[in-house]
Image (cartoon, rainbow, N blue to C red; front, top):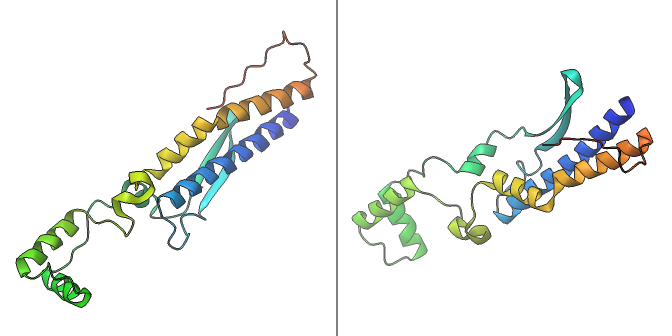
Length: 171
């Protein structure tokens, strides 16, 4: 049985690498790669629970993973005078009054986008975790894990009879 458990662990770890690749790919698509701290933080671990149950966990030690995924709840606070000074420095003639600058400051307080803004990755800027998991599902990662484990376990057990059924649930 330990040989079978090792097969399952190995295949789950392989699947974990694919999930991590998808998370990293989507972070890149959404331009969330400033210092790569989040990008490099993902780990795949197979954990064994009682009764021989194995579980694949994809974890990150990044404290801001969910802020990047879900977006910050608020924007940024900027004073109207700072906006006016910035506009003057940049030569933005259309921001002339304190009232105009205050309007921009109010917008920034409600919604603030990084340089890529709403236009990054075809309009995607948030929810990279869900998008990456959906892409892995679309690619058939779970089905591939199941097929590989089933094939290897059948070989170990010597089951070449097509009528012999091995039921395996990966989810």
